[in-house]
Length: 213
Image (cartoon, rainbow, N blue to C red):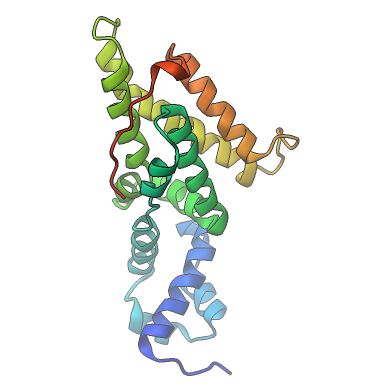
């Protein structure tokens, strides 16, 4: 027998259950009946809150994509080293992922489903990284460096891909090939490899960028 909840609480309960199921199985792997069973309501009651599965899916994606980490304290506490700040930002992101592992699954499903919410995932979850990297490299790279603009524009994408792949490896793969390496150790090494790939030494990057969020 289901407990009668106020409308807002019932809606939140449906969203939470739908988030877990969509993250696990994707949009096409979940039915309204399954979500209704998970929340102990009838499909008719569920439809009172969300008129279709697509509307419910969109609501889950938009709620998840709106979540955003704050890196301001990390920048303040990390001194002037670009490497230290980027490492600190990465740790904040990793911690948020641990608190809600559905975030990455939902983001990946939204990409596969070509859902408009994907752009919100970038704006709220990745843009702080790309902005900080682009700002710092623009301040630090020599103006006569070959392909300078391309390097700056693609560096953020490069780091985003590296970090996403690390999270997938450590949390989503069935078998962790790097089981003896913690995610913290892996992320620190990614930052070092990232700077090395750009031909940058730690001592050459000492300016602190101002980031929002």
